[in-house]
Length: 437
Image (cartoon, rainbow, N blue to C red):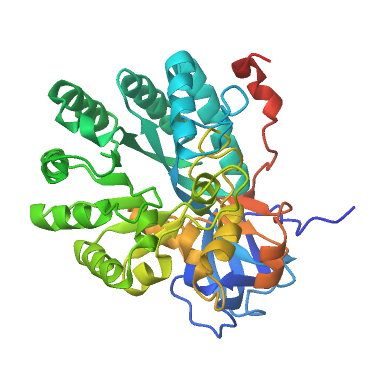
């Protein structure tokens, strides 16, 4: 049986010696880097990072654990999830495995089963899982068709308060965008979002009078001081150009809040000139883009007895090169939109490296599940290791990138406020009462 990565000292002040850090996640430290990795000793005191020093420079006499060059990361940010949908696969699967099958299955399950008790139990299960994996910040989208918006946002607010300081939570309302002109519904939805400190969201797609609907969205967000997070162009249809329209609308409305767009898959199907014009507009508008590679590869270009041809990701490298803030995230977990997943950003990162080719070099790749999504969510206290910051860290036995990306890192240690946490994952059997088992 393998020994643990490290035995953390039972002391308020101690040293994590001979650590390997992703330089992109470390603030205020200059050190020689190899593939974006630097070596350091980390001094932890009273739950915070007291110092980040060259190896061997930590004060003598302090309790110390030798990490033997194992990696140390900050805790993770998962900026696009669906905690309200999670873990319904066993009671409402998606036999076709495609997008329309997912929509139909979720709608049926929501109408039949999404009571406050059901949503809360599944959210709690998901958060216990994410916490054990080392996540400290999550944004979830909440299905907000009436009357579900009032049920789920009230549950979310309760859960957010209960988990504060362990997993910090944000929520965006998710609804079919054509309903924005239903004045009674939208007025009530905005009241709920404001009351529970959420974000305006929605599923955007090509529809009549899209410009007018986007103007309503941006005007409402401005009037209520709300940020925006939208589902955009989650399709392989190259004729779908909603992303470009959203960028133009943000510029036209002079909107000063934050706008995040998720998916943006059809961008990868555009011809080079059109894609470049769209990317330039996205950069000019200051949109942030999050790709959901695992879910979109699962759903898209799926046909019976036919091998898929498309990856289901946006033009990630081109957007990044244009100065757009880009990140990756989990998306759905064990529901009709994605039958698998465990809210583990290490899995998300590992798969994104393969699918999007974030490697060769990997120098800055770690940012996509750490500092960049934290910055997009306006929480720069997450996603980095900095002197004076919380000692919220994830320790790995892997020393180099190939080691890190070749195993699931199931033996990681998660530290919160300078102390190791119980990493026991919840047992799926706990969900059996919700499934009728």
